[in-house]
Amino acid sequence: MGGLNAVRFVVVVLIAACSATRSAPVRPTLPTDELVDALALPDGGVLARTARGSVVRFDAALHRTAEVRPLAKVVAIATDEDRGFVGLADGSIGEVDLVTLALRPIASVAGELRWISVRGQELVVFLDPPGDGDLAIEVRRLDTLDTRAIAIPHGGSRAMLTRSAWSWSRDGDTVWFGVDAGEWGGAVGKVDLATGTVTMFAHRDPVLGFVTVGGRTWIHGGTVHDGSTRGYVAELVAGESKDAWSASSRRRRKVTQGPPPRPVVKLIPDGPGSFLALVWERLYRVDATFTAWTPIASIHAREHAGRPDAMGNYPATTAMIRIGERIVFATSRDGLFELHGSTIEPVR
Image (cartoon, rainbow, N blue to C red; front, top):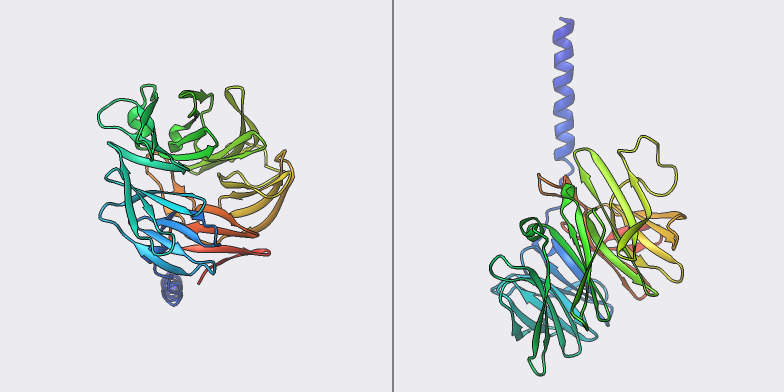
């Protein structure tokens, strides 16, 4: 009888737990909440793209004011002062009105478009051309239509590169690119748009982003896979990456300084000599030597599953942007969030 009573007790506990779970419904995910990328606009608003392929406009109060979903999926967005641009899955590129999001075609490329940047009349496109050749950056003048291509050698790893996640950053005539291949590692390089020179750096960890301040460039990233986690920030110097901070759960010694060993998801400047670093879900202020870490807040947003062969989970935050004195976060399932003092709150 004692064994039977124990079984009954377990069943009651399980039923109660299930009832408690049902009584706290999860907020449904709306298509406009699934944000893949976001950029700050001059008027304090946000231009974002969604996982379903639309482009969304938020005003200075972070309220959604417009959404356009072209026939072809939006795969890239860019801004240049008061102009907005989108790249579509069919290779076409358009300028968008930043109020109505009305689209005006301006160019097209052959191949799979990955990223775009516009400065004045210069359009820069990172693409995967048709066939089995190298990846490429195409530089085009919008006024004269003069076009030149810069090949990005794949080093025999084209299949891995084309199915991996990428990140890009532009600093003047330099385009930085990074690869996140999960447990298979990563790669980082730069393209000099003026000379067409491509430089690869000695680096093996997945890259999630870049930050350039005062002529110095850092990369950041890490992995979550098979129960182990790693995070890092590294400076790119003399053809290689040099860790400024790193931590791994595989090390036997306990991490006593800085954040836990998780990927550094976002990193942006925060005034002279400091940065804001989002380490998975935790936001820190850190000095330029990456030794003094001050916790600020945590973002409570839902993550999403990664590729089973390479990454256990991917972080919830897809963009962290500064709009004046405000810090705004875009997430993959829960829309926009904003930092308020010591908390990060969802925008409703």
